[in-house]
Length: 424
Ligand code: GDP
Image 1: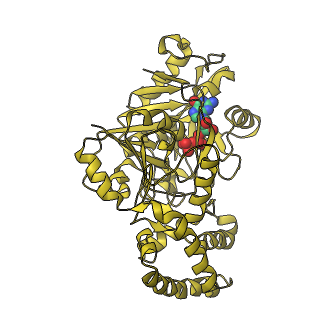
Image 2: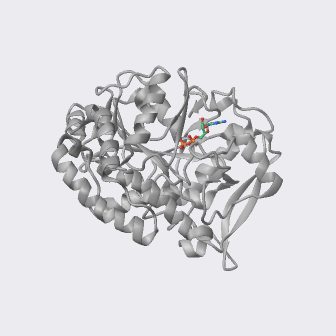
């Protein structure tokens, strides 16, 4: 029996989607436990190429039950759109293979509006939000001012609840931001429409998971973003508004008493970062452009060019520690094939002193990278499937990373397809 979380070690976009898609063959249940439509997982398999935002990546495997746990930001509008998209590509979604927690809170249209209004107010001090409403959503959840999916089964009580929430929300919209208030009828119609669509999937997923646990089922917990975006342990305030760490999986999934047996940490062979905030190892100019092009580093959700840099061993070791990773998957090693020598951010220089400690966010603003170079392998790795067939320079690069971060690399990914993987 395995209870495994698959998590990002860095800033997100490490290639978790392709790793979850690969690992789901060994699992009976896949659960998304935090975040919402603000990040995208890209999965390429025999059915095509899919950009998933909310749906668990197990939906492509027959017999896998997929769950959206209580910890996710359940945006019914985006979820429904995504469900339609994958259905159009031939993936059957039913209440048997997709279940939504009755305790998941709904992300409402005003969350997206408030997200955009706040970024606008912040102007050049903006956080770089994806404007999917995530920060206002989680703020409201902690203020106990959200609608739970289970309330959709109680329309009368829900109407009264919605009216109370809107009275309060309209105050913020109109008096803080000078925006227009919502018309109650519009919101009621919006909610009724999506309620009809998603209600068949809503149930007591915690009870389902407890039963699965009793039956010794293998359960995979799928995280979004990475350790450096975790609300409590990431580069605050340039974090997301939920916990992206493996430790949150039992709570956000709905099995609070669970102890994970494995944590697979996904690390990219170089660094990328979307949005604002300190990014110590950042490359600029032509060097950055070349890497961005080679790795196709543009946001899955927004299309924004990602900031890029060499692998950051300081941040990666911190990410491994925060996640409690038991094994790592190194992705996109193939992308570095064009480099003659491979830069590595080995340490930071903070206030004139070299350190391998990951600093407090304020200190991070002034940290500088200490770059070292390793020999490149100068060839295409995308066809390699065995560790022994990797060029010596590529093996040395992988070993250098695992030694520096203190965790074995069990998987090396050399392409986006399901089988483009080296198992060690
Ligand atoms: P996630 O949010 O962590 O799942 O990351 P993304 O969905 O942004 O995935 C990264 C992108 O890289 C996707 O387009 C993947 O198809 C692609 N990808 C994943 N692994 C590899 C790899 O090993 N090599 C290459 N070339 N592309 C990969």
